[in-house]
Length: 258
Length: 288
Image 1 (cartoon, rainbow over the protein chains, first blue to last red):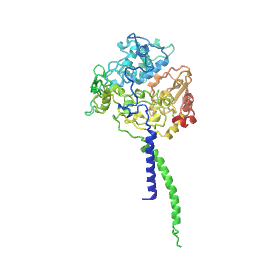
Image 2: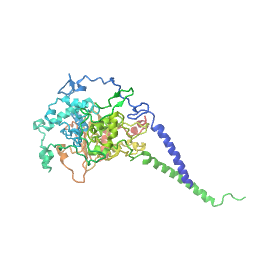
Image 3: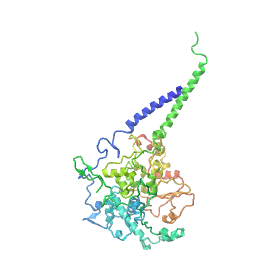
Image 4: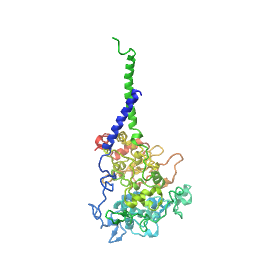
């Protein structure tokens, strides 16, 4: 073996040992960072969950209309703060992130997830939902509704109100007349535009869901099963959760299943 | 007394001197190449996750936004791995009997976390904050690559100090309008795809992101809705439109057209109050 090769091998070995040693001590320090596990606690979480029946500072907010969407136990048709273009813009941005997967961009309840087999989401332009007071939308986002899970973790209360306000704007947009826009602004029918551009007439029509909504990108296969069309958790929990024997011998309800 | 070394040893001695130099150089080059190689940086390695989650399917296929799962990216140092509940938002009803999703259902039923393997793992002695990057014009794809095209997640860039400094020394080359942060297809303005930007004039109490309004459709033309129906000629890829609303754009906003990254970067550096390269590349910016 020539000297050069031997030197190289020795050098490499020394450096890789050094590198390995550094990685352990400095790169992975024994401290808690968000979402890093730990062996210190038995559940392996470095972030501790809030103890039950406690209220943290800044969390005592259950009574206010702003936090619950309820006034004396009833939904009201008003926003707890003045609406502005910035509120609507924020609402549109949040709506497009968190609501469109199911409700679609125009709010007709035929979003992509629904097209892939989820229970059809609410159509904001249906008579029933049009008739709901504004805080109903806030309440649904906070607590969930039917098959819809709650989005209180994703949306802050202020964001939920903004989205509720934007839903109202969306509803108006689908039934707007020329009188609703300021004078002097050119209004054109979407159908006419589509026609000018050479699109089929159906381009500007409302689209409807196919009768069977269990569409999947790939054909079902035996080992993976088919996309389920099962009812949501809530009324009839879909996940048949096993009961976990607690330390004191009692069984506790599994986390997350009502 | 006879000489120990033959006269021919002179050549050998000279040759060994040269050879020693060469070995030192070769060693240096090898180690340098090695420390930046995927073997060390783990670039491109697909870890064996508990569930083979496909960003491609969920982002490109279904159109989910980054923030649908990574909720804390705009307001915290870490983007956040979603809780199992986020998975169950859809998978309570879809693919309910898929064997691949068994770890998700088990986690949901028992309350245990899904042990995902972290792909983008910075050393603990580096301070990194997502919030400041996405709110001041650095898009997801600038660091993470085209995540919407990754069936299995992997690390696109080295994440080494040299790579960080590359941008911190000249942030303008990667800046984009804050309305395009989550646009995976963004590749900067060009002659074919110009960007128009204007300052909204809002200053007090407004986030930096809202002081500039940028658009990829000519604001001097008729409404944006009409423009979106117009398909660009073949061969010109339309700049994917972002999800950020156009904000409350004052009608009198003065738009300037940008056709190259350098001029746009210079403008945004100024508007977003990006600190100087000296400050950004100083040690205590990232090691604190």
